[in-house]
Length: 238
Image (cartoon, rainbow, N blue to C red; front, side):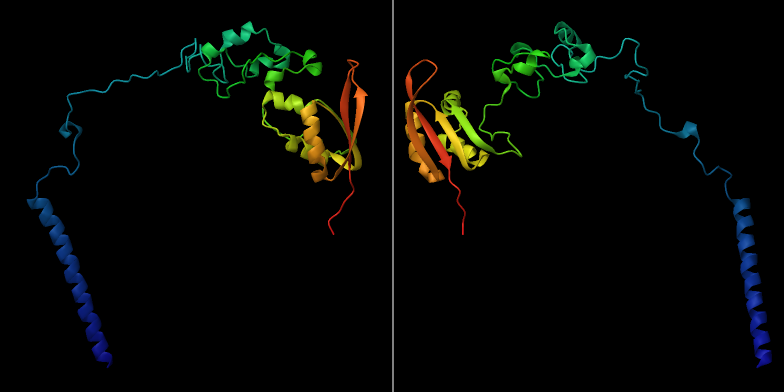
């Protein structure tokens, strides 16, 4: 058994030597009988195209700057009309020059948020503290800002007719529902308005669980008018 292992190891060693000899012989045979041309491609052998590509864009920014967007029509940052903003004589100390004042209609090309009709430049402080341009307000029916307060008394002096004349889409029912939300239980609502609106509210008040009393009083013009005194009931769902 021991002699068989020695014979097998000797045979494997001869096989490895023969394979190594054939590898070395193949390497030298290829070097002698092959051509000596390099395996890489020289730069002169590349294809040459007749046309050429020229660099057309700027390689540096000029000292005077670049006209990125049309300053004549666009005043929104970062592309705003410097000349137009300068004509407004804004308060630079308050950074008013960075506010978005829309251009006139004939120059309004890139105004992203269209202003309402009869748009005017905002009033300056402190004038704007006591005055508010009506055209700046969005004409839509929205709740009154009362959070987190509620009230014991509301006095609606021609409020409903005012909203209906503007065409905001606020119905009488919408305003009455908003009043009911604002007032506390057992609170009072005094309503002065046109006679058709007073009659409409008198018919709708019981549906809101309001107690209604009608009184004839004089207004500031020394004329008699109908005034409604409504009281919100205290009720609960049981």
